[in-house]
Image (cartoon, rainbow, N blue to C red; front, side):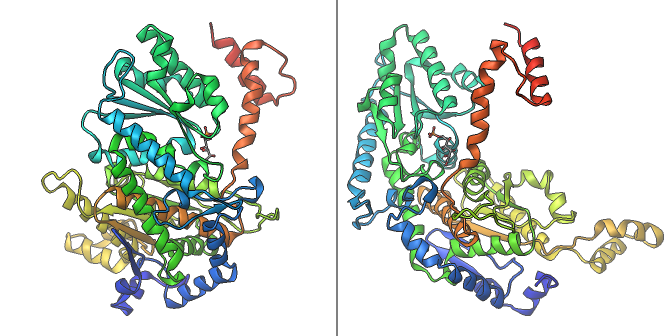
Length: 529
Ligand code: G6Q
């Protein structure tokens, strides 16, 4: 296939679009613009069979502890299990607990939205600030932005994650403490960045409202760690729990979605779960060759491992999905950015790609040059919705036309003969034409998937995110990885703990390398204060 051009594949097979497209509820996948034919697909699905993918899928869904290095089950699918089927972990059905938290979320969100839950001075809550980082930030923020039109009038949401004081300061600068609710979201409730932001937010609130008692009306927590929540000063009655079998980057379906639920209401939040459940049912029931997450995973492996592509671009043609690349970056790179198998063997081939991207059409005016005429193979996902939630003149038609034009140009390219004919039609001849000609040629053959949603709704957004979760899982299984641990993020944290006191205590820096020592010394000299 390395010598085959997709242009020729399309010319040879008029049924290619029908053959290489799939549907699940409000989501449609066109994967015909890939360097594949029927044989490629058959061989790739055989690869999936050869690693017992079906067994791994069953093991995940049924609560087996497939996160071996942390000895944990992986059950984000239980959070959106909308059936009556029980799901067991260590012999105990987790579903009653899941439903109980959803009911508590409903009672609480109804009270906040209905103006029954009031701030310390008796005013309604109009602003919700989620304080969390990583999995306790990216997923909920993506959904909150994607589904803003489904939000209640009069409730704004904000997300504070970075320990850079500029983040919290910037957000609270425009807020009224009397009408602001902080949701401190941390699975562990030990994440230093989140705790520091929460403490600073508490100081801000107490200073504004004049009494520490105000905290009880303006702070709630989402966590698995009740003692730490209590120690922070939040009443466990105002805490929403979840479980160790929910990984951070897979947690937006749990109480971690509380800020989203306050914004869009529990009916819409449950529709988000329904959408994800619809994708789960598709994933767990469809044969590999008709299975959207499996196909996406196999295509990724095809380019990554077989063609040596190093990156995968995610390009949403939808402003409301502006955080999709960031969420998928964490989901994919934290899950499959690994070089050791679950049994501890070091791999000798490439695994998870660098995920990156930006909203279209903006990126057309930025990095698309490299995709069209650069030297690298860059597989890409284009995500767009048929209907806009913000109908405005003919904006949507122009947006969609641009998206389709880009995927077409990337696939077809422009041959030398076509470029020559265009230049001649513009009146160019001789040396002037020959000089310009190579710059006007587009090699094409850049693969892309187009993921078309009917509209951004809770259901379609739920399905979209679940689709990517399963894609990442399938790739991890095929590469032999444990996609659900994240030891790689620990080392930097460990060193930061050591460096933090050294910035101010003037202790010896002898154990550091010269670069780190030099930078600490410079910081000490210039930090002032
Ligand atoms: C996600 C990661 C990580 C985690 C954050 C926040 O899968 O584990 O991004 O979500 O470090 O952790 P806490 O929720 O415990 O604060």
